[in-house]
Length: 232
Image 1 (cartoon, helix red, strand yellow):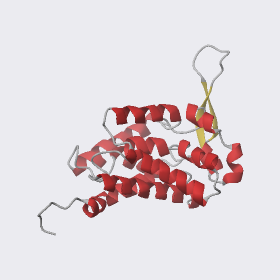
Image 2: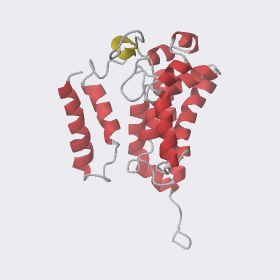
Image 3: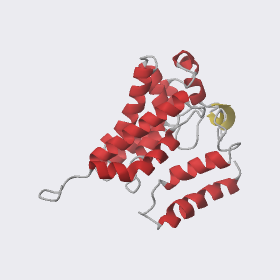
Image 4: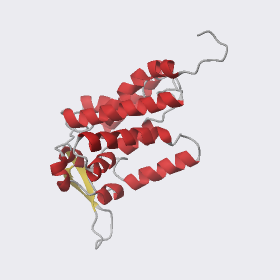
């Protein structure tokens, strides 16, 4: 995609989503997620080309950088149903990252290592991303064929891991209570399933998280702890 489009997305994230709302700690939506949705809607032919993406083609016999080839991303194939899942990348391929997808979301192993690191450093709570991932897995398993491999493919394909680990754990744009964060992630997981299963757009993580960002003040209010001795 043209570099000027990347610059437009960066300006929108930093200036509009964060700066216009008062700067760091005051934005109501995750800047990266909001900018991604803005880019998908604005530059449809480049960023929003959901059915075609780039993937690395590694030639181990050659020396140098891997070639890049165009190919279908896993999501359109998976969204066609359990019967078509055999034509999608395997669970191992999704874990290693040798498949089409946007930058940062393709290597499941790398994302899971980041999850372990953040939990170990006590930057995030382990159950927050787990609630998101478990919801997506459970929906596709229970409501779409009782196929565990197919459900796992949906978790590893697209932006579920990236969104659950690095976006749904944002301190500013998610609820400030533990119960609220779990509700946030369950809602985002349900929306992701609904968009992928019934929507015309194959991916739903960004829109799901952005929607839950807007509901965060209400979730925080519903789940806030009552002060002992305070007014009910």
